[in-house]
Amino acid sequence: MANVTDNLLVRGARGHVGKQFVYRKHGDKTTIARMPSVNKDAAPTEKQLQKRELFSDAATYAKDAISSADLRKEYEKKVTPGTNAYNIAFRDYLKAPVVRKIDASDYNGLAGSVIVINAKDDFRVAEVKLRIHSAAGILVEEGKAVLDPIRRRLWNYRTTQNNASLAGSVISATALDLPGHSGSLDITL
Image (cartoon, rainbow, N blue to C red):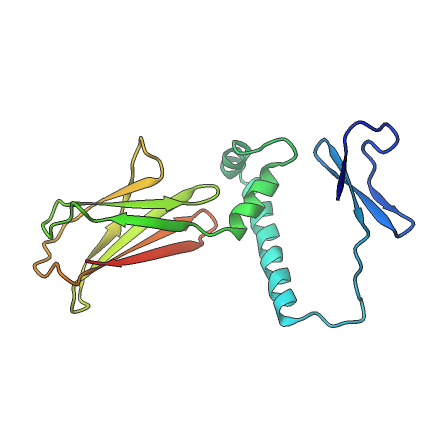
């Protein structure tokens, strides 16, 4: 794909020429690419149908998100040249958050211990939930972590219950983004 930067003849051009190549405009850039070929007689594969459904859902979410004044303002904060709030919301739908790390080094099994969760999303992590199970698989406690106001990728969870059998306990953290997608990480002590 070629980028056209300062040619008056093609600046701002869009569409195809002789079914050989196509001009596309993205923001201030005009690109030239080979004309895509599509076999209209072939039935779509299951994977193609799944991708189409995913993109349809992403488009619906993006339309709904930018129709909300509050969400539109949030997405507009991330706009860069060549993008808009719809593009950012669309991409946000496609990418689920990731829990990168659970730091339980200060967790000693007593109420009041702090567990730190490092969670990331391409737009914003909306909330982080934490669950602690004993080695026997019994739920010790669960709750929501609080966003660290300084280190914005870190979420702090202060325990509320004592855990007598710390060895073998499992800590599970789940991050949720605005579209409702989740990413999880489990660690065993």
